[in-house]
Length: 397
Ligand SMILES: [Zn+2]
Ligand SMILES: [Zn+2]
Image (cartoon, rainbow, N blue to C red):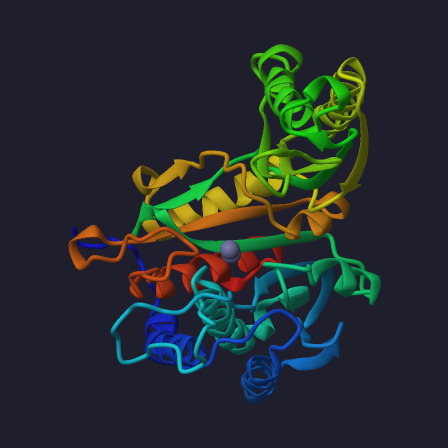
């Protein structure tokens, strides 16, 4: 499939460097809050093309580019961390950091954002307002967006619009996914500790069996999504782990369940949490056991603003044509860009990066994940177009 994207000469001129940067980062992946080499590279490259830089939240980098004239402030975010995955790809740019891999495509995010930074720096005279580039650590956990927000990345000057991009292997290269409203879910974690009273496996009448209670709780939790959540809304309740017991003929004192809850809207998220507490406690009590629940709030839902999604869509159409900009499907995965989009209107867009013909279609987080690098210049071009639409670039006038 030929890629019919319309790339400007300026973007074509940085394409080779963008791909080289991506490969360099891919060779040297670093885990969350340990991205020291990565942020050093980002800092050097930003400064080389005239951006101001500041270190924020450990390994995070804030880049600032001030336009000739005053105007709105736009934030572009790229996450920079890798995953604890042993790479199985046999490529020249294979990870040299054994057991760590850019298996989600964040190497591409950094490279595309740096490419856009170089092009936009050359067009600074045509920009009204301020561009902020947020190179964020630890998206895969424990989360670098919140520390950067707490360090003031959205203030001075106050950010008016925020955007983020993800390489997307669920979409072929040449396509771009945009949607208004929720795009990713919230991701909370819970642990339920069920306490009974242990004893002999042959004398269950003398015990309160926590394993049976855990099984009943697991089944009852399934009714939250099927019977409590509105049929046209979405949520996930997964029990990921059950631990209990030590031996075939012993009834143990306790069992533990652990899992994840996903939702697209805050009221649904709150309702699922309430129901989980009620069901776990109620079902355990009905069997003579007790349930103690620990809830850990994770990333909230990632929600795109309608106007900003329209702006991103228009920018994408300019680059790949209307036929190739699709209404993005919602994913029940989660993203800490959500904290930014809770505070500032913006849009999280998806850059098609798969190519089945080249064998580049493994899912994100797979040890064989890789993407078609010809998606990178397309990403750069869309970034530039979004910035120009917001900050009144000359090509729009
Ligand atoms: Zn990921
Ligand atoms: Zn990712």
